[in-house]
Length: 123
Image 1 (spheres, rainbow, N blue to C red):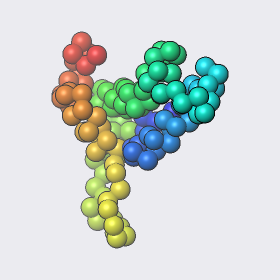
Image 2: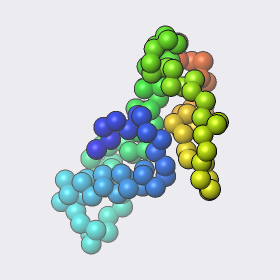
Image 3: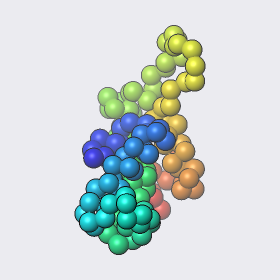
């Protein structure tokens, strides 16, 4: 369900939809329905599953570490250096970028971007 999630900047809307789908599956596994009115926390504890937001964050940061260990000449790293300032956009709020998502993930976990090279501290 979250295959490839490390590459896209998940908005709150996307995370909520994935969370709803996951809870439906967990309820189905336990044999509960919404009519039973059992809290999500109880079902998660019973099944022993971490919240989907944590798994999404974990996969994004794993991919981030993988990218930053690559040489700067690698095609994947060259995308970071592209400048989209000259691209004309429409009106409204700017789109959420992957780098903004990574920045918020790092600040949520109180990690530094420079810890990528130090495997012991990163984990």
